Image (cartoon, rainbow, N blue to C red; front, side):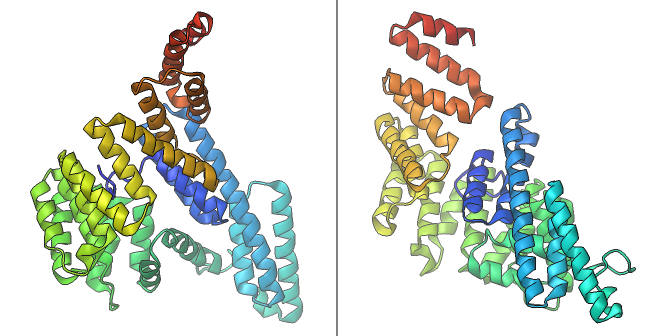
Length: 404
C-alpha cells in the first residue's frame, strides 16, 4: 500500500505518532481516538506486540484523564455564565472518562451543587438536568455522539470538517461506525443518508466508498469513485482514494490515466504531483518516481511526505547511502521539534547504517535506544547488537547478546 492508503491505513506506529502530536497540543479527545485506532490495529494484526499494546493503553488512560479534567474546567466556566445544560453535559462526560476516585468525587460534588442551585431557583427546571430520570434520551447521551463526531472531524481538513458538521445525523452515525471499524453499519447509514437526506451532502459517496473498500468490495468502491469524479473533478481525495484502489488491484495504467486527465488547476497541486510519483513507486518505476519527488521538493519545499518518499525510493533503487542520509535528516528533525521519534524511521536509519558498513559504538547505542522504544522486535535488535560487538572485538558482550 502507498502513501495515501486508506484501505490498510497507516501503521500502528504512525497512528501513535499522530496521537502524540494531538496530545502535545492538548487535543486529548483526538489523541485518545488515534491511540484507540493503533491498539485496534495492533490487536488484530500484531497481537504478539504486548508491550506496545500496553503502552498505548496507558496513553489512552492518560488521554481520558486529561480530557476529563478539561471537561471539568470548561464546565466551571459554563456554570459561571449560567449555561447549566452544557455544563452538566460536560461533567457527565468527564465522569464517564475518569477512573480517578478523587476527580469523580469533585465532579459529583459539582453536579450536586448544580442541581441544588437549579432546585432553589425553579424546582421544575431540575428535572431537565437529572439524567436518566426521564423516558427520553438525555442531553448527555445525545451530545456524547456529537462530541465524538466533532473529535473525529478534528483530523479532517477545515473545509471538509465544516461541511460534515452540517450533514444529517444518519451520516454522522455512519461516520462514527466507519471510524470504529463497523463497516457494515457504515455502509447502511451512508446509503440511507444518500437516499433519504434532503440536504446537500456531496461528499457522502467518498465515505461510502471507503467503507466498501474496507469490506473488500473494491469493485463497488471503484465504480462509486469513478462516478463521483465525473461530477466532482476538483475533489483531490477522490483521486487519492481511487488510485489507492487501483494500486490494490494492480491497475497501474488506470491510475496513470486518471492522474494525467486530472483538470487544471488541480493537476499541478502538491497532492496530485506526489500521487503520480507514488504511483510510479508502486509500479517499481523508481527512475521515474525520483525526479517527480525532487520536483515536488523544489516546487513546494521540504516536508516529511516528500522526504519519506525520497528515502524509500533511493532505498528501493539500491542507493543506500542517500537513503540513510535522508532518514538521518528525518531523525534530526524529530529531535529538534520535540515530537516522539517514529520507530520506523529509527529502524530504517539504523539498518541502512549497518548495510553501509558502519560498525561502531554509536550504532550500538542507537539500537539500544530503539530496543527501549520497540521491545516487541527485541530479537532483531539483539541480533544486530551481537553482530556489532563481534565486529568491534568485544566477544564477552557479543556472547551476552547472543544469549538474549
